[in-house]
Amino acid sequence: MVQFLTKKRFKKATTQTLQLIAIVLITFLGLLLITFLIGRVVPIDPVLAVVGDKASSEVYERARIAMGLHLPLWQQFFIYLSSVLRGDLGTSVLTAKPVLDDIFRVFPATMELAFLATLFGVFVGIPLGVLSAVKRGGLLDHISRVVGLLGYSLPIFWLALLALIVFYAKFDLLPGPGRVDIFYEGIVDPITGFMLIDCILARDWEVFRNALSHLIMPATLLGYYSMAYLSRMTRSFMIEQLRQEYILTARVKGVAEWKVIWGHALGNCSIPLITVIALSFGTLLEGSVLTETIFAWPGLGLYLTNSLLNADMNSVLGSTIVVGSIFLAVNLFSDFLYKVMDPRAR
Amino acid sequence: MILEEQLLQVKNLNIIFPSPKGDVHAVKNISFSLGKEKIGIVGESGSGKSVTGRSILRLLPPYAKISADKISFKGQDLLSLSEKQMRKIRGREVSMVMQDPKYSLNPVRTVGKQISEAYIVHRKATKQEAKEHTLKMLEAVRIRNPEQVYRLYPHEVSGGMGQRIMIAMMLIPDPSLLIADEPTSALDVTVQLQVLAILDDLVSQRGMGLIFISHDLELVSSFCDRIIIMYGGRIMEVVNAADLHKSTHPYTRGLLNCLPRIEGGNERLSTLVRDDAWLDADFSAPSVTVSG
Image (cartoon, one colour):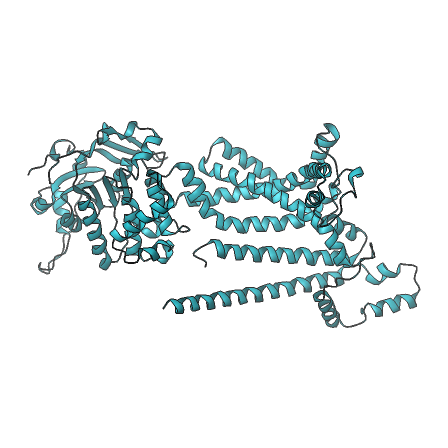
């Protein structure tokens, strides 16, 4: 009987996993198709971007054939597909390097920023949401609502500029744009690409401090958005859970109120919150384009902006694919965590 | 069973829920007391029976207004206790089994952990000791494979087993009063009696007081020593279970008459007659005297 049960369960888990993989593959294919089509639709001539506008028509024609642009669209797509699957995203016109290498170089900076921003969002947003759910209609609830509303509605580039003016230009409390001050640049070997980790590996605490102080402003600003979102979601999840009868049960048992709230109720919220955190992390990875531009943060967002402004389509499409894939991966991971955490979904 | 030792005394309890459309007076001037006995509270939906149970634990929503001349438990006035002192009463002295184990158990914690928690809250016990007690308690509610059930999640157990788990959880700190708020209403008829038998045995063995809240008059009369009959937030009468059929109160008679009987003929059952004049009559103080 027990054996039969485990067998059945195993079978269920396998089919679920297979289904999930199928869905991911289809989504990924769709992502590639859309980026490919965007690349053909935009009024940028990829040949011209390579040969320059002073090239003769023979050179132009030869380049066009070399790039396979004379073939029918569906053939072009398959060529594109097979090269992407081989990990070849083309060569950047701007840096003259393979796009994938470029992305590997700049991505850790974005990741570092998004990770710290999410941490900020989680550690400020969730407690704020819990407290405003517990004291609904109280002062903190109103404050968090206003803060949240501002977080949703203020454009980040405006806030970022304002923050730079106040904290950097006016009062000089925090350093300005960039990952480190200019005279610290290049001191630490980029082993992982994550500045903080590299500093720890090199045991260079001076650069570490400097890098950390550079991170504070952009990470807090980005994190502000995820905090606003997370606190509102946490609040509504908590209100829902606090109404449930198992909360009454815990109180009947004589469990202390803080344990009822932070243990029983938040414990039940943590499952849907995983998805929310994962999604907001994914959004931060793309949403950092504006922030990175303003803070001159050498990450994926800045790379994408520069490529766009220089009509470097290979880089733009490559970055799009990478961001899209990460979004997919984050979703997959949150689904997986969901299954692990929720006994009912196992 | 006579009131050898007073456990709980309630005097002129009033519960009001303020609402924009005017206050709702859920419970009006009710008084009762109980010792180590089983007392049933019977009434229709909205008669104030559940609210009465919860007010003893002071677990009504914060906007509810509770007032009473006295709610005393073992001589302690519950209304004057601080929230912290009240937490020592909850679970340890007075606890409550609710209607549906599907909702009253935390869905993401194992059954064992939830029962252990009830023990650890009131006793200085290690996790291992709590586990041992939990397993014993699961056995006491006649669960045959406690080790296995200990590890299950609430969605993996049946309704009857869920309610037995709930009873185990509420009795593990060894309270002296249990409030059972419609503990069998959500269960299949076939398991209702099993759960009741377990509840009955444990309450009798441990010499506890029991307040059994239900809308099922027959069930309560077969199970309890005394019955409080409530209507519209008021106590209509308090009768000894054995004397239920001799009751003369029109409301009690009405409740009894609308129950079908096997040996009865085929005549039409009478519908329940309600008379708002009963609400103004004063049943509060005197009728609680118990003969025998």
